[in-house]
Image 1: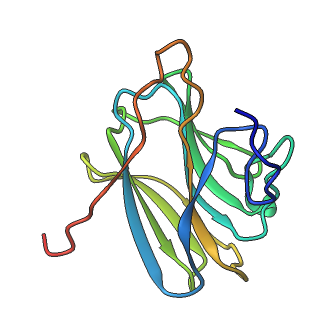
Image 2: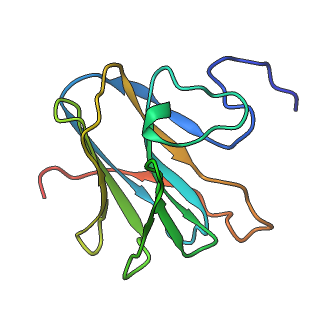
Image 3: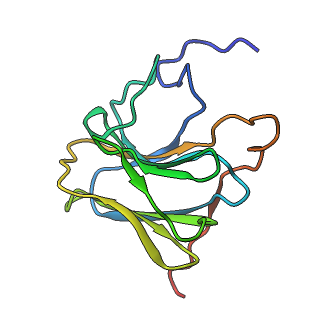
Amino acid sequence: QKLSDNPKRFDKCVNILGKEGFSSGRFYFEVQVKKKTEWTLGVARESINRKGKITLIPSNGYWTVWLRNGKEYSARDDPPVSLSLRVKPQRVGVFVDYEESLVSFYDVESSSHIYSFTGQSFTEKLYTFFGPCLNDGGKNSSPLIITPVDYNA
């Protein structure tokens, strides 16, 4: 199906932004990534470029961590930082403190820190960012699932 050229639609990659933006305070979300061989998670600023080749780095408005080839984890900083994780996360938590300009990633099950972007400067709305990546012949067909967070636990 041919889709219209909406300026809010990514045209060269399978990426999605959350509906609600944040411009103050703190927010946290968790995403189930089990059975995925590739994914990208994080936040992006409102004015990001969504057309053509996109480089996921903070100076372009993206604060993300990804998995590639089932085992290669990377924080998409500038330059990118290769991550050595002891266990493959099944659920990833993303915490943002807008005033502190902080984006942190956690392995929810092992309660371990994955990576933090610090020293950023947020000046516009941030949106949750999800990249489920391509199906890869069925190897990466599991969905990314945004999971409810129980704040009373």
